[in-house]
Length: 338
Image 1 (cartoon, one colour):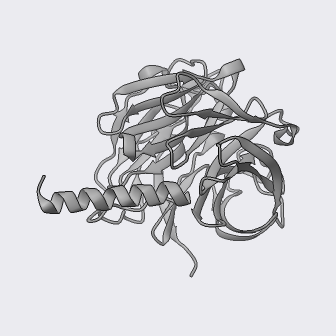
Image 2: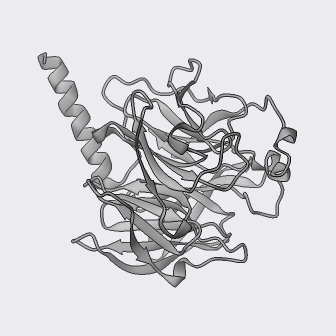
């Protein structure tokens, strides 16, 4: 290996380690181009989640097509990295880039509304470079794999929308196991449970509920990895279906309020930033009028987000042929307030 290549490799390893330890959004590798402010997604994509790799490429899952697109930061045409239905992928839910192991992780749901066959919900992995399937871990007890986070040891934590629990997959484990089950992760009037998940370092894990509630939950992580106490982080207002949550600095959380089950129309979604102080938080809404912004990431001084446009799907579960075709989707961004 040439000296300059060795230095780049060491720098990249340091970036990845820092990202895992502090639970922040991935930093770009040295020399990686900053993404353009707006990037096109494939037509009819109906995205649900996204992640970013060290080279600045975005990985965006399709809730409708059961696939994952790779979107380069330079605005070139997106490529379908994980083909529709590959390894049984159905509703593409949470996406996570595991650069240290060159894996792409995704939650596969069985909600329906897909152009591929529905399969039991599972956590799946693919090769980060080629999209070739690597593994699949079924959700126990007919659970629903919604979103995931990873700690500095490579352990994955997964939210379950059909049970009040967080599951865990340790390195080398053969199956998902229940890490924390608690009635405070309980369902609202819609009968659903957990949604987004994020780690702030290795000892504070946050989850959001599918229901519109005025709080998120924090689960303490003990030194031995066991789950500790569950506590509420109260917000100054009801969150409009807090979908993805992202920790981008200590005690700083981006909340993507999809409003997917809200009552304020198709453009009631928003992106808000929370400052957490103990068991309370303040909120600053920085983007309004969005059509189901179910996920996003923070890159540098910009927040990137998607619009899922679920309202175009939900009326047509029994008649998928009536789902509108040639619907455009993109990845948008907004500069963070100073």
